[in-house]
Structure formats: structure tokens, C-alpha cells
Length: 289
Length: 289
Image (tube, rainbow over all chains, first blue to last red; front, side, top):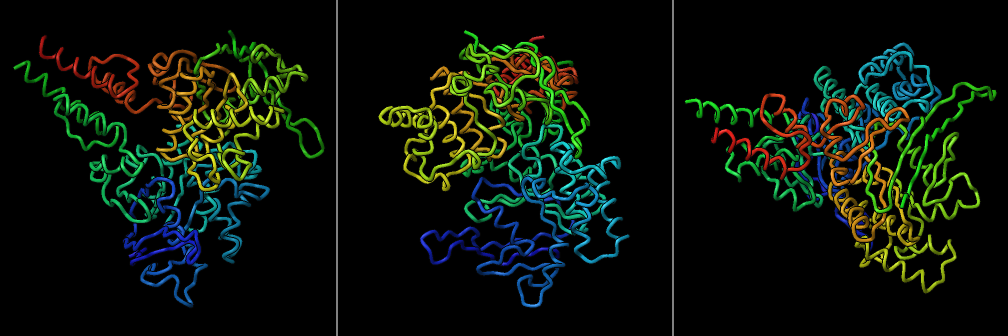
């Protein structure tokens, strides 16, 4: 059930010279518990789409349903929606403002008018989920490293106990290990808490490694939607719309052309490695015989 | 000729509490010795907080060393009278394109630098034209920078630096905020400037695949240069790089993993072509044994 978009269109600056259709008749079903990667080049409509998912933007036409209810209908509780569909913007650490890490994370649940004990429990829980150690709880968020700041900012959204967590390029500007740490953490949260995760990313490698469904956007529409292996078989079409497959997918195609028969649908280093090793063992066995 | 000559560079900054008492002294650079020859393409890797950006800010005299010496294009950066000569020798491009664009028309933005240097008007226009052509943005000269993509904006920012005719450009994570296409555009532009215009390039990045064409790679960790060599020498040391919170290109990792499983592959494979070639040798070797 969860999120359902029915023929959603959105037009910027309607009636002016700058009129632009950012979303074109999008119908999309996002059931509970999926880990989705949303990809597309700059200006393809990704950000406009995610802002429709928690009611920050209203479709020009079409309907967005949350658990069966039209979220833009009169009387719909948007405040509750925003705690259920948590949106982590790009560079979320720019939004940190409190004097301590703990206070910053408490800000969201406090605004839900929860009892203080519950607020604190949620903050502790959220900080634990993102792997911030207790000795940092009373530190100023501005004293933390870039990766830590970002995790505190994500904890601020997790403290709202969302059913759906949307992250807009959560790894931008982080070093390789920092990227892995954040994504591993998100994967863990997804698995343990059964939260739906929508990851907006420019890294095909990351998307291939973590998600079970990829939605590709182009010119305000959905170009592809499916499992990573399936979507990346369209690597030529993806290139035409400014995207690409993970590097290992290309390697597998190259090998095939050179008559090294390996399956070309590998999208991660691990898959490619297994595939090539199988080929290698095969070759050696044949020679021994 | 030496473009950048750093000897035992130390940069310390003092953290004070609210009463102004010294809380801690942090050493952001710890005896960094660095040699960059004119025309080199040098890449600096290192995790967040390893000292890369602090190093970059020394090179165009935004920061002054606490100890040690730094000569840029023959000028001592401690010599305040030479500060403009230094900044004209070594221009800097930052991460966020939106923070670097100041004019409402592309060509005016590019002309801003030379105008401030007191370059005669005729000459400014000549430089603007040449710089915009060098980065492939000449046809956008009368556009508004607001309507450009991230990659295009970043190329305009680079043209703005080029118009000051620097001998050296320092780029601090210029692609961190761009999509795959934008990243490719910017990296291609940087490589061309290095090859055709013989500009010395110092590229700071978190993307491993952007440094495989560099002449030299430096790895920084806690303010020190801990590894130095050609891309192949650096990326042959997968485990060491991971220890410094870094990574290797996906193809390199795949080759490394396969080698660990006993396949006879060389160390430090950097590109798809190299990998495929090595794999063909593996196949041919297996059949001729």
C-alpha cells in the first residue's frame, strides 16, 4: 500500500514564459519495505518527485495517495504525513542548529508534542541507529566531522519514526569510507526496522550494491523501473539519457566481446568476481581433462 | 621549473573556549613536503579532515604556514607584498559552483577576475573568449549562469580562473556536487587544459576514477603525506588505501579480488582495457600451458 502516485503531473511557472513540465503523468507504486534507488541526471525531475511524496509539493494534476488516502485532499493531516515520510535533503548537516547533538535530534519529536521521556528515548534510539557514540551526545554538532554531522542530521529525521525514509544524495562530498559507512547504516536500518528507503543517488555503483529496485527518471517521466540487473541491461539507453551502468557491467560486456563467456548482468564487484571465477575454474577443468 | 615547493609545512590552529582560553591545538598540516613541477597533473586523495583542503588553501595564500616554507611559482607565500602575484599564479576552483558565480551573464562572470587585476578592456575580452573556448562554453557566453547545469557552471568557474592566466589551477573537489555527465565534462576539461594549455593542475577529489590519468598521486592522512607515486603504484596497494579510508577504482578492485583467488593478473590494473587485455592473457596462458 504505502505510497501510490496516480497520473501525477507538475508544471513549474504555469502560464509564464518559464513554464516547464517537471513531472509528466507519473504512475508509481511504492509498497512497504522496499529499498529503492532513484536515479536520473540533474533536472530529470527526481527532486520534484520526492517532494511530492511527503506533500511538500502539490501535483498540478493527478493524485498522491499515502496508505490509501489522498494526501492533498482537504482535512488530510499533513503534519502526521511528514513524520511518516521523512525527507533528508542534500547536505542535511547545513540544517543542524542546536547547541548539542542530542538537542538537535530531539527537535523533531519535540514538535510532535510527545512527552519528554518519549522524545529522549527516540533521540537516543535514532543516534544509536546511525552509529553516533554516546560521548558525542553533548558535543556541539558543529564540532563533528562531515560524516558525523550528516549522520546526526539523518538521526533527526529517524527520530520522527518514519515509515518511509527518503534521502537525497546522502553521500555527496563524503570520502569513500564515509560513503560506505552511511550506506551500510541505512541498509541496516532498512532491514531491522522494515522502513521503506528511497535513495536518490548519482552513483550507479552504490545503487547496484544496495537497492532492490531502481527507478530511472528522464525528462519528468519514468524511463525504467525494475531490479538493478534488469535496468542495467539497458546501459546503452541509460547513456543516452546521461547515465551509465556500474563500471563492472561494462567490463563484463567487454569480456564477452573478447570471447570470454561470462554473464553480462553482473552489477557489483562481488557478482563479477564470482562470474569470472566460475569461468576460470571451467577453463582449467577442461584443460586438465 | 618548480611550480609548488613546500618544505616541512606545518599549520596549527588554536581552539578556544568562550572565555578565550586555549582548549586545544590542532595540527592540520604536519611537516608536508611537496614538489610540483610546471605542467604536472597532481591528484591529492585523503579522507574528510585529512588536511587536503588546508594544503590547497596554503597554495594560494589564503592560509599562512605556522612553520616551514612554501614557494609558489617562486614566490614565498609569507611575503604579503607578493600575495596578488601568488593568487594570479595559482587560481582556485571550489566545490560548489553556485558559490563562485557572481555575474548575471557568463562572459561578464569570466571577465571579473582580469578586470580586478586591472587588465585593459580589449585584453579582457580577448581572454574571456579564449578561456570560454578552452572549457567549451563559448557558445553560452551571453547566457545567464543560473540556467546552466552544474557541470557547465563549474566549467564557467574554471574559465574565470583561466582568464587570469594562472600557471597553476587548484581544484578542491570540483565534481562532488555534479551528476555523472557533469563530472565527465569537468574532468575532460581539466585534462585538456593540462595537456593543451600546459596548466599545472592540482586536483583534490574523493573519486578514485578521476585520478587514474594524473602524473602523480598523493595520499594525505592526519595532515601528513603518507603515500606518493604514479596512479598505478598507488592503486596497487589496495589494503593500505583502505586503511586510509580510501578506495580504488571498481576495475582495480575486481582485478585485485580475482588475484587473491589465484588468478594470474598483474597489480594495479586501472582501466577496462587493461583488465580485458590481462584477462585475455589469462585465457591464452591457460590454453598454451
